[in-house]
Length: 210
Ligand code: URA
Image (cartoon, rainbow, N blue to C red; front, side, top):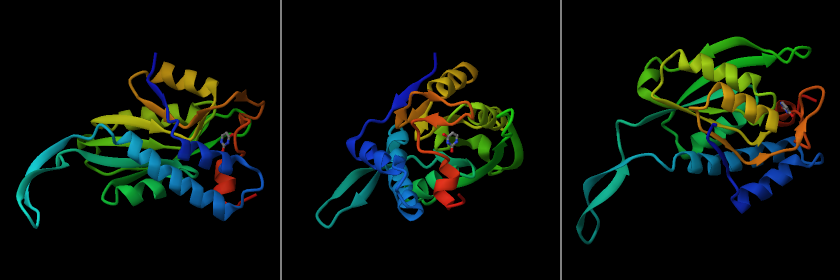
């Protein structure tokens, strides 16, 4: 059930460890998230189709590979922590379109409440990369994918940094057709829905709000 890929590249794993450390500053956390996201973008776009076009090098003509123009991406960020991954991915794919989903977790029920939704009008002709650093209960990611499916995109992939086993199970049960990419699968959730050992509140650490 589900398609889960754990991205085990040593550079990503090392940077994730730096992000987890409680002494890592907001500025460092932000720049590490950007660097990891660039590498994640590289992994999730591995299957982008290529076509060949005739070009001239200084020495010879050749048929050279370029990205197929009919394959268009939209990166959709779950606010607010998704913004950190979005910024990194846009460095590698500057012409990708961007969508935003505003969801917050009700602190008592942990149920996601939508307060914002804006995606490109032609999303039905695009492949979606949905990003959020933490897959904890899975409630937000599951709700975001449901909402995105209602706009009929060509495909959806979900990318996070850390996942809890509970979140993976919930996500794969709700959306077995959506590939999930993560850098690590941690031990469990605590009673407040935080990932253990995790990295704390990704939004707070990214924006320095606590
Ligand atoms: N959201 C976070 O930012 N951190 C967690 O551990 C869980 C959800």
